[in-house]
Image 1 (cartoon, rainbow, N blue to C red):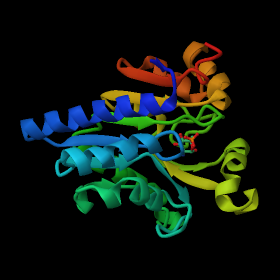
Image 2 (cartoon, rainbow, N blue to C red):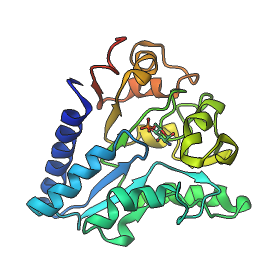
Image 3 (cartoon, rainbow, N blue to C red):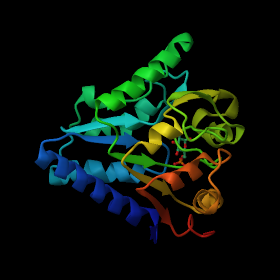
Image 4 (cartoon, rainbow, N blue to C red):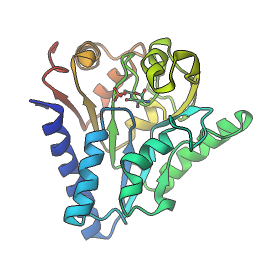
Length: 244
Ligand code: GLP
């Protein structure tokens, strides 16, 4: 779906997400959302906050699982995804704290594998992810599944690509401060979501969007594995769609 600009697109996606949450509220069932960080989804979150404040959209039945977190990372650090999610969404809505899940960047290194297994179990216990929001990195990563991540990969500790660390440098006041690793849901974990919406804005994403949509599925560009999923929407502004 190609929109004139990211503003229009973000509002449309937030409305669709709100519709889904309301439907589940009427049915008395939870809405299980997979959430992303980065600049791409921020406007969607702001619109959800507005819908909560102005139209009474309730998040009482919403359960969330975030895709990833830097490792190591303290939750109160400026760059943590815990802080990001609080700032853009969780601090401004009525979600129950026990329904929020974000990979723990403070897990002891020798226990991370166990922690990741438990994260997967929590997703399964919640009934699986209904609606997964994604961005895409310039390396073709989804979550932090860097090139080399297979279609069956699960939640795990991963080493970040050089390009990803360069792109994050300004957030960390220099590339040398960017963590070298991260915890991420796997490509296989993401592909189990029932409905996936990937957002990409701006000319900087045009080349990787073309590779994701038109290239052969390959672990060199993990986002190409989304082509195997039966219910994916790629939501673009005109600049990100320019090379299609
Ligand atoms: C980070 C996140 C990804 C995100 C990507 C793109 O690497 N871990 O989940 O999709 O950045 O970020 P942006 O939306 O800022 O372009």
